[in-house]
Amino acid sequence: MDDGTEPGFNRTGAQSSPLSVHSMQLYADERVPEEVSAPDEMPDGKEMAAVRCDYAVEAERIGSVPMPGVLTSAFTAVVSKLGARKPEVLVDKLGERLAFERIGVRLYQALIDKAAALATQQRMPFSVDDLQRLRDDELAHMHVLASALDSLGADSTAQTPAAAVSAVAISGLMQVLTDPRTTLVHCLEAMLIAELADDASWELLISLTAEADQDQFLPQFRSARDNEKAHVRQIRGWLQTVVLGEAR
Amino acid sequence: MDLLENKGVQIDKQSLTWKDMAGKPISKLDDEAFTRVRILLMNALELDALRLSHMGMRMNNELRQSLAQIRRIEQHQATAVNWLLSADHSPLETTIAYEQVAVEVTAAVAQREPDPYLAQVYRFGLLEDFDHLYRYSALLDRLEGKDANNILQGHTDIAPGRPTVEGHRAPVDDLRLPHGRDATLLTKLHATLITAAEYQTHDYYMTIGPMFADPVARQLYAEIASIEEQHTTQYGSLLDPRQSFLELWLLHEATEVYGYYSCAQSESNPRIREMWERFCDYELGHLHHVCGLFRQYEKRDPAEVLARTLPAPLEFKSQRDFVRDVLAAEVDLRANGVDFVKLARESSLSREYRRRINADGSPSTRVATAYHWTSGTELNRSLKAA
Ligand SMILES: [Fe+2]
Ligand SMILES: [Fe+2]
Ligand SMILES: [Fe+2]
Ligand SMILES: [Fe+2]
Image 1 (cartoon, helix red, strand yellow):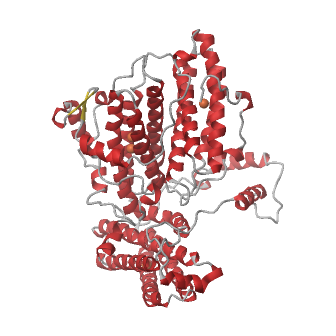
Image 2 (spheres, protein in one colour):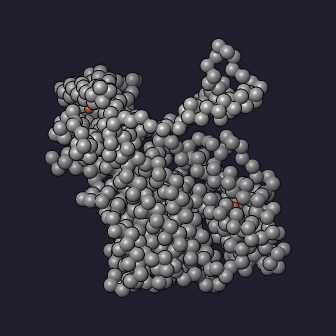
Image 3 (spheres, chains in turn yellow, purple):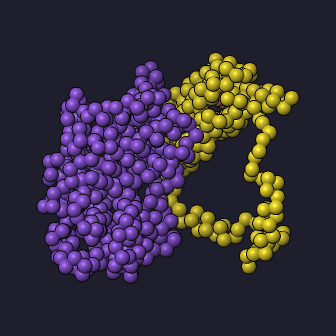
């Protein structure tokens, strides 16, 4: 497979059929609907906003956070510290991070598989070992989170609402990574989105954990965050190398 | 429930708004797995009603108006039911739910089916859908990093069944003997219901398969969709082809009544139960209307086709013990024409078919190589061992 960005006969734009598109535009302009957006307004559809608003007001939530069946002393501490500020927020966020790190392992595996295919034809800015190290970091993070949830007495195998939502957000990244037609650049860009989120989310989780007086988790969480910062730097660097190298 | 006395809601009084159809979905996390099972099953049955109705229209000039009128409301019912699925279900998670339907509902039917041959057919198909569940669980774990039990909620086992790679058969080996003219109502309801479920499973896989980027997923959906087509052939061939179109239509409406009635009996979510009850009354309206057509055109009493009372409601609960027993006893059964035979006596046509179709390798085997379901995903295993 050719991994480059190539010029060719892309048919999606107006310039690929100028006469037809000119006629289409005239026809559409003749038949503008009665209601038009004011010239100074974003043409984003007022009526759509009303529907979204109605549904958002009436909606039930995605789901609930499963709370510990048995109250551990650690969890009691979370409750007494966060108290009215809801201990389930911490459990929800831990569950989200866990799910995200777990999908991170699968994302890196997909990147490794893609890189193995491309390595036969082009120079890579990294070795398979580099990628495996990143993948194994994500796996180690996942285990840190599972242990944290277990030690609180929470169910590390449950899908929390935040985990379900982050899975929706990340599903497009997996589509990019596993598509046989995507290039290394496409894949690194997808990984960058994941890693930037990883980095920011660990920061947030560390603040929340400190707030809940769960200091026993902080050393491992901080070391995970430091890993993630290194991941962001690495992915950014590789991306830059490949894109600039290609443009030359 | 008295099928013939209870007239339900008149068909011209049945209507839904767009908001009724695109209502509030269930919670993937908090609602019971069996609520989702009921949703998928009733959606399948409604879509099958459309299918039958369209075929009927092509062959019956005098029934066109009634068919069109009832078909419109069935389509709206299907929408209301199917739109209960929330958007945080990934297509692959919904797939897991489809296979849970195939395992649990078919197992419930197999145990209640009075005709021993048909019961065997259900047990035979069940072991293949059980295997699909295992293969798709592997894909869910390895592609999306998720535990299939988040969907199954502990009701359905995740382990190999009759291997999918072995389930590809020559078309003649998927046909079964139809039930006899004197079959009980329950036998006919079962066959209609399970055929509808398999049909919809097939159509769902055909719709979402190409939406995956991953060639592993695209291959797996292609392979399992093909088996679901075999299942549709198998179960559809159980329906007695000597029945008239109106008889089939009458039975379909009775099956829809039975489906909604069974759902209403077992539903734990009050908002969803209301929908089952409302649609049960709608279906009684359809049934009553078709009873009139049956009297008018066939000059027969609908009671000849239907029993007065509905059988006990379909069970929506884990059939784990039964499924394990069937797997232990019958995993090596194969088909030879309409008969079920020992492994060694499988038809040579099916062996040859399989040799060709698996010539480039087996997607279902590859995806699940060394897959051993573990609570919290297989990546959790090293942690557990530690
Ligand atoms: Fe990372
Ligand atoms: Fe299946
Ligand atoms: Fe099936
Ligand atoms: Fe109906």
